[in-house]
Image 1 (cartoon, one colour):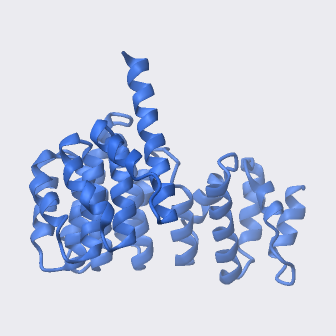
Image 2: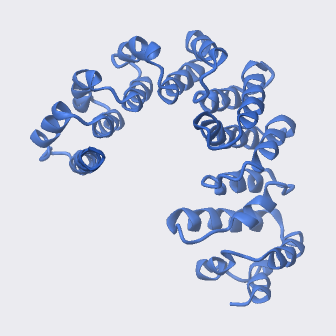
Length: 305
């Protein structure tokens, strides 16, 4: 379908939004985008929200679809919901030119949702900087922006928590100190964010805390501790995770199975094989996926050797 026909359809409030037609917006040219942006300004905010949400869902369901030109344009939309969804739509985009834009959104937007979305998006680039995939200068600017947000008590807890989770992959000692302080805070949400951050940080110094929190009475904290242990990837943790497969909370059980799949090793593989016929269908499916992940790891090890 030609771009003008698509625009005519989506701008018409009396017309339904058809996903197959939205898919035709994938891989737009800069010239198409200019025409799109002109028409976009004429659409009311509610319909813009619906369209951008549909585009994000389509992109997540089909990796061949790419609406990044639209998403990049829409992070400057006047509507906060559209902005936040556009940031989410860029979840796989690794263009470092987005970094200053996300920092600007984190620092200048009033909307909690936009600030939190920008912080989470910066987390992806923080990891890239840590791995050397982009210039270290991006890591420096990201770290400064996220630390400032975490330490700004005028920010909402949601924004500060997401900034904490995002900064965790940076190896600076100031980051470790920030995670430690958040864990020791009296706010439950910051504590949960700190445990999540420990998993992303992958520093062995957090292991005693994570093992302790596996026994926490709060299911959300147990879930985050289990997931963080899975990110650590050391086989010594397996014996501590196995009892959590029988946890009363289903999400914790599923997280424990997934963590065993990530860590792998003979003990995890043996346990998962022995429980492959669990009475819970969700657990059976999770075990099958975990065993497939371990098999993939084993194949990779053979290939590398």
